[in-house]
Length: 452
Image 1: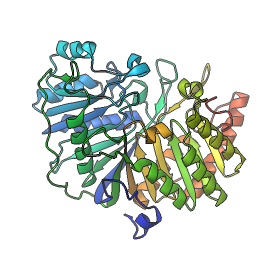
Image 2: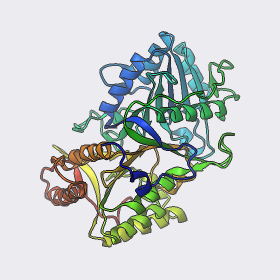
Image 3: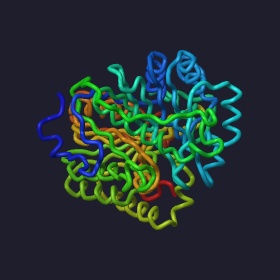
Image 4: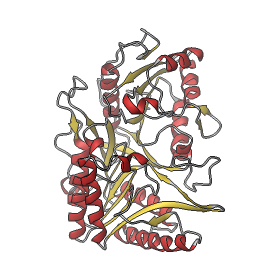
């Protein structure tokens, strides 16, 4: 079933979003990196005109599924076939500049590309002390074969995990990651195209030393002149977080991701299912509390071993308020906070949740790069794709719940399925305490002590 006649009024799109909801799209959620990156690499290999990518975090040595080599290898092969390859890379500043999973615009990166005789264009884009966090791929832009991939998956070894989350060769917080991307075809892909052109032409480092590749050889792009033809039956919308003043096209910035999350939670009637790396947005958590008071079931999946920065920044007023709001949800019997884990011969491995998704009532869903924390709404540059389609939203919920719960929820309604997942997560917490095997991955955890 495509979009119902009342879906956009029941789960309203943000009125302030520059990109309107677009009808006539093919939307396909891609759960876990091994599956997503296999399809993305296939699309790159089949490209006939262009490959444009927004990159935030990247491990240059990470290899793609199927023995394809690294991201740089994949781009080199495409450029070698005469494809217009352009890569927008985040230029981190401050503490993040020392991270080993970024490729900043500096002398070292220039030397790396020069040593490979790189034949594609790159520009670096900064946003002060915050992150250019969009993760998007656009293949054959402006052609009938145009396809876009929007989501949250970084280019790293841990992000290549499959749905079984088999034990990886290395261990650590980010060695085994659960994540989600989304493939889109149709009119909404033109908005991904428009976003890329805006950022490419306005990239902050483009005229600075080591801020572009080849040095002095990159050119600006023209915006799309026509909208891509329909490719399916799903209504979808590109929503973003962009600070004011970054780009001429958005002098006042954009905060439509936040507005979209809040509107969907307010509209929820049966359930809200969340997967997110960070669950500390006070305004979102307050709306979830209101939904719980109305009898809506809420299940949220987060990493059991969250990034250490959260606890370190807990004294900041904005983050402290988020901790308080999350802890307050513990008193609601309809709320379950869970984290995935897998039993190994040596103990339990935490599977790191990096996805940023929400499904509401089997009718609306969003997939993207924005975490549920105020800095993803008013600081980092983000992009999500939201969609109104009961069939696609339901199948996406089934895919997520089945992986985490280890049971078949296809025959269940959404509220029943997330309720069953909450029960499994509670049982898994007890099994884990006894050192036993788990059913699926989700284990219930305490909201009052998470990320402390």
